[in-house]
Amino acid sequence: MPFGLEQTPYAIHVWLTTEAVFVATVFMPLKYALHRSPVCNRSIPAEYRERLFRACNANVPNVEKYLNRWLMVSEADCIKRDNVKDFIRWAFFEPGYTREQDRQNEEEIETYTTETEKLIGRKLSPGRLDVKGLGQLLNEAGGSHRSLLWYTVSYISLALMLYNGFNFHRSTLSRFCTIFPFRPLTILTAYRSPARHLTYWYRRHTSKKRLPVLFIHGIGIGLYPYTSFLRDLNSELETGATADGEVGIIALEIMPPWKKM
Image 1 (cartoon, helix red, strand yellow):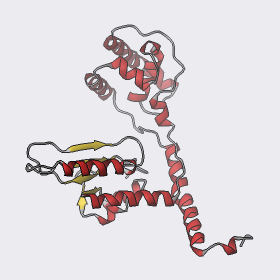
Image 2 (image 1 turned 90 degrees about the horizontal axis):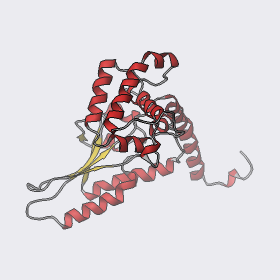
Image 3 (image 1 turned 30 degrees about the horizontal axis):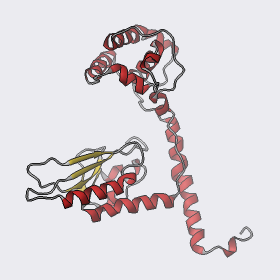
Image 4 (image 1 turned 90 degrees about the vertical axis):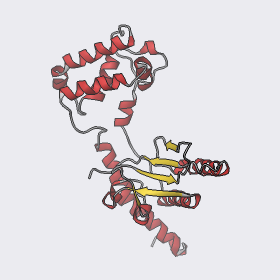
């Protein structure tokens, strides 16, 4: 044993050993998988691409503003034609796009770019602005190490939602090891989500006149950063409860899959 460690309490030895096992068996394989797994891993036929393109345009009220934010430029006028083409390649074609595939699909890409110009209402400037869009950032997804102790604290914080009137609705037990961070409550809860890839926390809704609250969190490790907000919201709704009944809360957990089932 290295000098000095013989004086370390046994509990610290156990903790450090557990952390080392966690890094070797969970964190490192997960980080490797993230670097090798693209956001989208299969191509779609041309007719579906066109249908998807038109469906997207029908649901985007301001295409220019959307592209401006996606490409993360300060002024819409900075968007150039090749930037839009890069976005189209990322959004509608498979990853690992080769030059040969680009030549084969150039006419289709050009058509989508021209259609985008019509939606914007002006011709885009030629060339490419040196920016890194959100699509490229998503493809560069990585991982930062957090200790097993940190995850344990986050689990305890989530479990405390049970005492605030929430029930956890799990995915199938077969998906327990495919979601990270793991959800131990998946094994313990009796409630099951009707959606295969979606879990959520639910506070009972009894009101006949008012709608329940739907909460959708941002990118992260699920609902852990928002537990205090949900607790306060729950308390406020309980205080404002009327004879009509209670307003419920549905808090979705959008967890990234570790591996495909």
